[in-house]
Length: 343
Image (tube, rainbow, N blue to C red; front, side, top):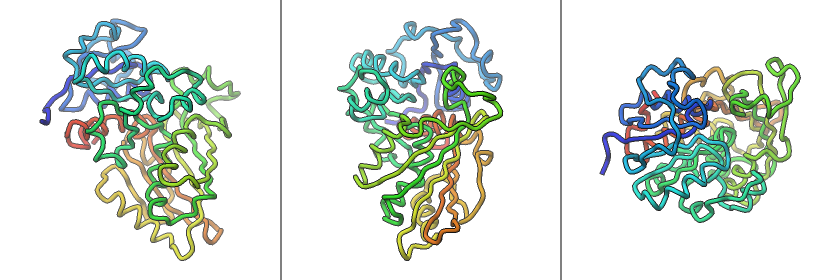
């Protein structure tokens, strides 16, 4: 039975992602925000952190104060390692409660691999196989079967949306892929300055984690579901801009496959997906095209090398890369209009 309205709680409401989440949810006609939780600033209004939020909402409170028996859905926008413990405490006690986790806690299907990349023991290993890693457009038929939805990372979202259809249709060489991604600094969270000791932070571009970025593990995991032979390098960069991701993905076309065929295949694959925008071949795009939207804009371009193309994929890392996609997953979960709160 479809609910017309649900009660939701946002944990981690005052972070960059949390604030975008609250802002978007405050405009959603099918949700009632019953608690906004954080570890600090208890008793403050959410408007003191984000002036975009106009709706009267509960003041910041501790998560221990929540009456879970009245809550339908918990959004978790917490540091890696914190959501798993909270979900473990609540999952069996409140069987009607659902979860959408925006951290990495349920993205990796193997607890050992999680520990390798996040340097922490997983506290809820038995719940991993009860969760779904969900880029919405690739999982619409599965989302309603799970109580725990794991929201993908921002980089992997920008990368998988253009590549998965091309792998499935066998249109590109899978053994020589170079992914060059550039992100605004909001992707690192509010403590970004402590994470990156960069000179001239706001006027420089910075390459980092070239060999072992954490998101590589989830990209590997999802690609291996299609083939064990996919080989790619992933090079992330930090830009002196607040939000937005542009991924430049260099691949070789299969013989006799035209750039038009690749473009048309992407258009056909996503023809029913309102947030995926496939441009005409050789269109110049950038993050400015998608800021403050839940769109993923894709442009397939020819390079000067005959069979080599570059696929540009642009998203807002805080929206389609995080809060917007989480709401999109919620909309599918509860049979709301997919664009509710996002258009």
